[in-house]
Length: 349
Image (cartoon, rainbow, N blue to C red; front, side, top):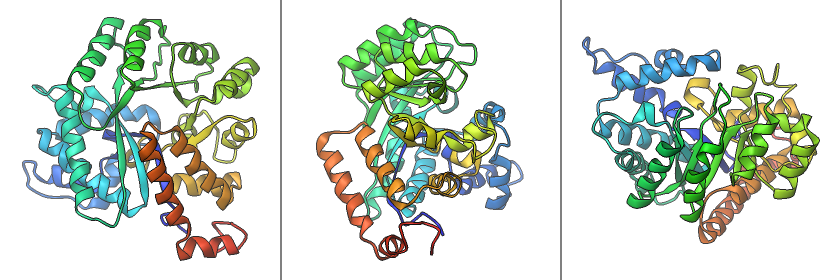
């Protein structure tokens, strides 16, 4: 049974890795041969078998983009998909090297993406889709470049800007150079996220936390380091798991071995994100289905996951309250009630 009927929150989704196959098919179809391929074939072309292929897919996507209208088009399709899946809040991460085309400012990229989301939302008045846009600071940026980017974002204040993300860095370069940028973001009340902690780099996670990061993406190494586990619990820092990506990258050898249940049992503030849903071939609903099947999570576990994600989201208290009420309404839908009567097992239907 699909979990599309449950209200969900996605706290980490790369905008470029989530562009819908139907959108990509339209873009491919405007090429020299003017032939639009089947959406299913495009989905196959877009999917990666291992996370190392994501860089290649980003280059391919960039070759398809022609301007800001494409970004708006892509996000409108994506937002419609989220609405259909009952995702009530999403935080989209912007990879600038992929989406910032020549002549575009960072603000224009954000505006184009947000315009697409707004277009989809205003098409229907019976749904609720909240969104925040997070700008990723490339791992090869200097401290001055990162600070300049944050200053530009603050000065222009684009719509629905939620914060910044420190990109994962395979080379493990020190994070201290990003301290001034993080401090400036904090002063402007922007969220701060770091993708770190799946490469056995416990010291690096502590470093990110000490620099004022409010959320960790990855963080599986915490289970091997008691001092890190204690620090994350004490500060109640949300850990966003990306289960499919972590299995593909070898962080976990399979779904049964994924440490998300151990992270939850250890008292970590754990939520789930989709990461690159199109490239991984897994929507947020499907990620949660896999967690439920292989980690033996019941309906209450999934419900609490959404509640924690709302608490961890970058949003105003008013919006947080509104979102919580929206989720509560969806809990009373007939299918959800039927699941609850069957012992709360999503797979009992």
